[in-house]
Image (tube, rainbow, N blue to C red; front, side, top):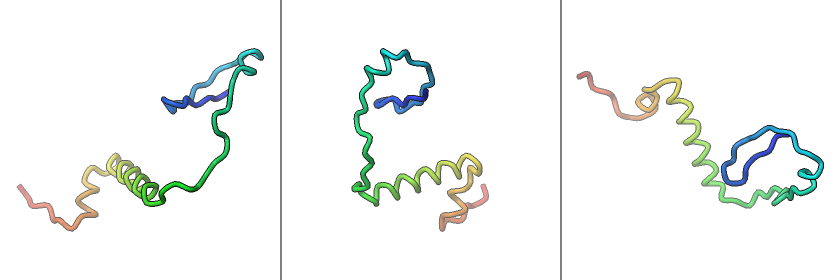
Length: 71
């Protein structure tokens, strides 16, 4: 079984006994789409820039309007 922590948001795998499984409660299983779309877009852009930086450390220079000067 895979479980995701509500505070840590980390995936943990393990086996649960029947008594432990009965003691589990589902906090919120319904998905809502009423959040701020601008925050979602900002988060996705930040995530994309973070991934791009891992592959190309000079990525910010290639998308910016600033020309790097030789030193």
